[in-house]
Amino acid sequence: MSLLFEGLKRNYNDAPDRVSFRSKQNIDYSFLIHYSAGFGQYYLQLEDDILSAKNFLTSIKKHIEEQNQKSSSWAMLEFSALGYIGKLYKSTDTPLLARFLFLFYQEMPCDWLMTHFREVMTQRETILFKPSLFQHMGTFSSFQGTFNKLKDKDFEESLYSNPPAEVYTDMSAYKNHLPLNAWEPGERFFWGRSPEKGNHMTVVFVRPAVVTGVLVETGSGGKDLLDSGQVEIGLDVVTTEKGKTCKEFRSLGAFKNGRFEMLDVDKKFSSASSCVRILVTAGQKDWIIIQKIRITTRQSTSPPPL
Image (cartoon, rainbow, N blue to C red):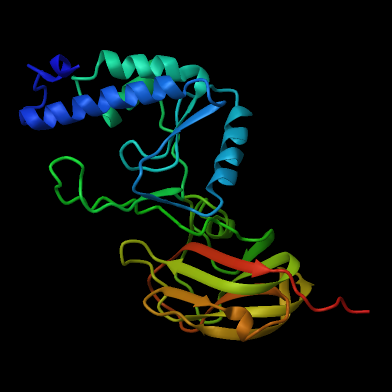
């Protein structure tokens, strides 16, 4: 085996020890993938120094089912943007992947090879799901013990758990950057023209629930932040000409630097709520981006009304 790592090509003018390291890594992965080929329906590539999001298996299963319902075939699904972490393959393809890594082991790093494998398998576009399900936690690389600070900026340890809801706003949305974008998972967001005092975005739950946590993030790259606003929870849904809202609202607190986060909301408001509202408390010239609204809830323990 040691002969495999002697006299290797230096395709990218890397130092010989780096070329040997990445080449051996390809061989190691090749053997691992080949050995694992018959153990299940899918193969998920991970490392030993990662943090996984809560309920990541449930999320992966859901994404696989959704992808399999589409007309186009796939070869690799990505649940992290980092290197060779969180890459999922069909077990029927893993013998080919193992041979591919073995055949081209000295040509390039494994994460580059996997991209070529995907393209060879006729999947032209990357299928990357966000938020990421895995985060790299190690601080030292296995190559010469060098410092490694790679982090996945799209990782969310607590996965999306928003309850079913409808979203309403009286702010003017830009193109297809609609209110629901801020509520649903993924990269999309709400983008609205200059908000005025009293403008709102109101989330109306399909079923009342006890709110335990609220996170709202606005802006992008320090721009289009909500400068002045507060978050409120509401009771008793009513229908108006402009949509649904709640009769009564209670303030949770104000935004700070375009962000609002509150945990243990149920310690202050223990009864079930029907709405969460973002209220603009002062107008601004800048437009507003609401990147995401994330809510955690629990079912009310109070007896239902007679």
